[in-house]
Each structure stands twice: as C-alpha cells, then as structure tokens.
Image 1 (cartoon, one colour):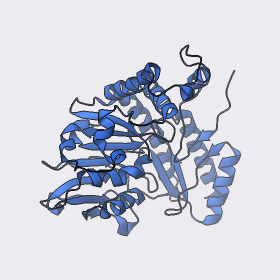
Image 2 (image 1 turned 180 degrees about the vertical axis):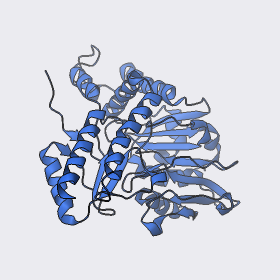
Image 3 (image 1 turned 90 degrees about the horizontal axis):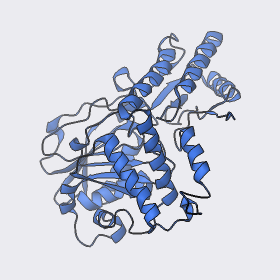
Image 4 (image 1 turned 90 degrees about the vertical axis):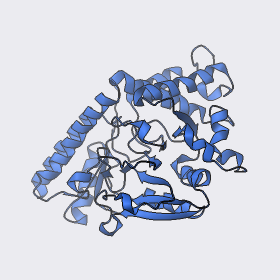
Length: 363
C-alpha cells in the first residue's frame, strides 16, 4: 500500500526516512521477540545495550571514527553542550575562541562567557551572516583553550566548505544540522556534537564524539551529570537515556549504510541542493539567495522574494501542493528549504519545478 507523505522541508525536527519509520512501526509492540516495545525495555537490559552498541559501531563505521575518540549519547540537546564544553575544557587561565556564523554560535558564546574568558576571532554578523568568515591564526590567543565553530547554520543557510586547521588548537564543532551529510575527517576535531533531530533521528538525543586526550583536562568536582567522564565510564548509561531516540538513531544509521554510506549520501545531497539553487539562480533576481555562493549550505537553502505579498502567496500555494516547512526564519525572512539526508530527491525536484512555475507567473 502506498503511503501519502508530505514534502517535508522542516528545519527541525525534520524528515525521517520512510523505511525507518516503517520498520519502527513493525517493531513498535514487539521488539525482536521480547514482547515489549523498545520504549518498555530496561535500559540495563542486554537487548537495549545491543541497540546502543550497534549505534556506536555503525556511527564509527560511517564516519571512520578513530579509536582516539569516544562516542556518547546524551540528553539536553546541543544547547546543553554550550555549557558542558566550557565547564569541562575552559581552564582558569585560558580563553575560549569562537567564530560567529549565526544564532547558534552566538548562544554557544553566551553560555561560555558564564564559565570563563572568551573571545570572538572571526564573525560575519555585520552582514547578517551571509557568509562564512576567513580565519587568521594570528587572531587566536596564545592561551586558547579551544576553537569553537558551528559547521552549518540553519537560519542563514551557510556552511563551512573547509574547516579551520591550526596545529595544537583543539577544534570543537556543533554539527547538529549537517553531521553525516558528507564525509569528514573526525581525527581533526577534538569534539563534535550534534542534536539528532536534523540528520540523525528524532529529537531527544545528542551525539558527542570526543577525543580521549581531552578528558585529562576535566576539572574535579563538576556536577556529576555535567562531567563527560561520568558518561564515558558508564557507556552513556549513567542514568536512563532516551532509549527510543537511540533506537531510532540506530535505524537511521543503518539506513545511511544501506544507501551506500556517507559518500553516496553526500552525492545525493549535492544533487538536491543544486536543483533548488539552480531555480534561484535562473530566476533573474526573482529569488534572492541569502548566502553568498562560496558559503551555500547543502542542508538549508535560504532565499527571499521581491516583497511580502509574493512571499505569502508562495507559501500559501506551496502548502496547497503538499510542501511543508518552507517559511524562512524571522532573522532572514523569505523562505527556507531544509533538505537534510532523509528528504528525498523527488521532493527537491518537485520544489524546484514549483519555484520555476511560480516565478514564471509572478516575475
């Protein structure tokens, strides 16, 4: 039986792969012969521990995570990481260095300021974050504790094309909205964190990939739940984790593997993005992109129309045709198409065709 699905371009929580939802539906009341849902299993049970370990193993395989790093499944979203990171790694005589590329990097900076000394080493705030800034090694203080970046900016539609590389500087990245969208060299990062609700699964789980060498810097007497060592020692099972979210994340990772892995997913993401950017670029200015060409995101395509009346008409007509989540954030206005891994190519083809037709009628 065919399933009617919306063209889901929500920024997050966002689209999940249909096969993942269907498998979860099949297993909902009886997970692998247990007679229980995953939501009912004890997090101390062998059955759930197998789910968690499978998720770790699959993520390790997909991202080629070296054994120098640990994987954690935590709660509190990426927003809790804004506080945990400086509490664990921003020493008394050190400075946390931040690159500002949007709202989420601003929030990370705000929380770090409550813990210790910080500095902004690059920013494009003055241009309303239309691009990723260039970064000079000389801007980093000699006592830099770590360099923090946000790899993709959902609101503004920008993404780092290449990550900064500085010897003896710990690079920390919030990858909540683009993890697994393309291959990365995990060894170049001291810590990666990502809320699940864009590319990894449903909301409620946060993945942290952390270099083991960092752990020796964690100060004593931190609150137990805010100490990364607590969760590493207990394999993310110190307290009851979001068991169903981890299970769904595991299924999403299996789905990515079945597609051919991150390289194949990246090729598909590029095709999806090119479709929509092409409709923008050939519209003769009817659609105006927010991001500069060299900073365009593969995950979030942001654009404006000539006026508010046309924007309202665009959103109303797109909704009638089954498109969901295309309204832009108030910081930018206009429209935004979030095309995360699980958004199918067909949805992007349909959106590009709609954009072309709308522009031909109203330009």
